[in-house]
Image (cartoon, rainbow, N blue to C red; front, top):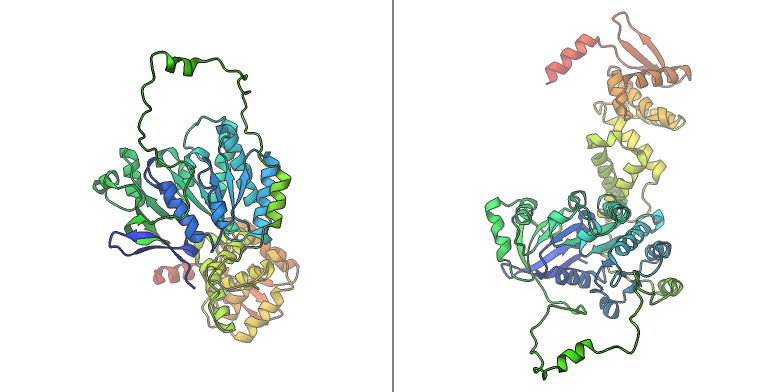
Length: 498
């Protein structure tokens, strides 16, 4: 089953599709002035993907609560306390229930705090609940402003931190941000920069048109086209949409918001002299309502939690994993490990971070459950990285014996042992201190020398120096040693290779 969703038609009257799986991995940014059709676009996206993925909507104006009647979303009123909102968000991830956080009627400072508490609850969920979630944030410039806003500095800080976590670090936790803003200039750059897919609607300010053109890879002289876009028309680009800028008109929706665009209505008949004055300034029999900064909660938090717990488990219509043999699946895992090893920045990353990246890549390839756990992944990563440090002409029996020996060693020695053993079984010289340090994620040659000394003291290797001053590492259990190459000769060989 395809995971493409239909959001409208292109300029050539062909269906405009969005790859939902790719969108979950690459995020989406929508820009358009008020009245350009951003909310209509988000509603179309939510309706089309409602049966495919769990959804969380941060709704500052209460525009999306009508989705609950048609698609079964749970409406969470923001009048709860921040602790209650965090607890509700955790339950949402646990039970995979689609929800709408309704911030309507809440003053700006409280809106930012409530949204931050809810997003943090989604972000901090336990690893077992890291299911894919489409997190839609309308009017994102309110929650991630580029400069000081109407809210207090503290509320702005915690809201911006939560939005940054969503867009920068949420992918590994299954959170796919879809943010919409009226102006790119008002949105924090580190939040906007993490999106790889863009849908740009009508805008009039030069700075916003120029930024939209830059994001879409268009020339500055083409930026004027954004002034001419009609309501509901957007220009899309990104791995989930199109590889080149694509004109899209958003299709119809099944639900509607509770407001809508204002319409002209005839004025009432002119009242007689003095009647209008009395209607407006007549004394009121009831006292004015008390001022409040937070809307009174319409539903206790316990009732909301009970509804989430009692909600039926949604049946998501995700595409089944492709049919593949055990050998094909193992080859796909090996390819992913090789991709991670090939990244020069991966050497200096923590193993747990690399393991999270490995799991995300496996989900993108739809390899199913029963993947390598953290311990098995570290071992596979170490063996693969060591195997690539020397030509693949090793004796298979010796190399298999070396990997067995490495399993008995401490974690900090295992990789360096395999690196040196690889050089020995392939009859290559001992790596330099810089090469060894770089292998285990350090820039310090001194740490490499100390680690080698520790391994020699433990009887794992034996080091000697030949009469030319070259270091040779011997492996008593394997019966092999690295070859001797004079440093000057090695420099000459490297120069010849270049």
